[in-house]
Length: 206
Image (spheres, helix red, strand yellow):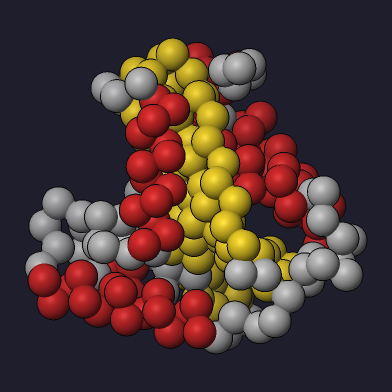
């Protein structure tokens, strides 16, 4: 079933500056900015071989640092046209098991909506788990825009309903003892989880 919300008719009007989650303190004012590696690794269209290897190393180290009882998910969205038919895909690793999720999003949506829905379907799935099964969920998305909106207070003129639903689900899971981490992964950089999520999203956007 397609995503039935007003978000389908919204246009992507997000102001992006490539930045990553990090806290700085200037006097008494807390400033949130994105991590340096968001900029250093470049974009998927112009990334060098060295940047690809650096990105793979960063994600490998982040995966190794995950604690026991942590579920790890990679999410991705695909859109044929932007706006156009779009789909969402995700792969979740829980206790050495893989679970693949995919769904169509809209006949005329945007890549941002698809990326947001990909994150949402993972949260929907994890809501059925208890703290006894997992205590942390780490989601890797290759959309700096989606992560910026959800974690860095970037403003979006569209998809408010979906954004609020995602934030509500994160809050609900936190209240039930499951910590949610949202991290950026380079896209199209030969990172297995991201590649699989991308493949799932493409299948549901056709």
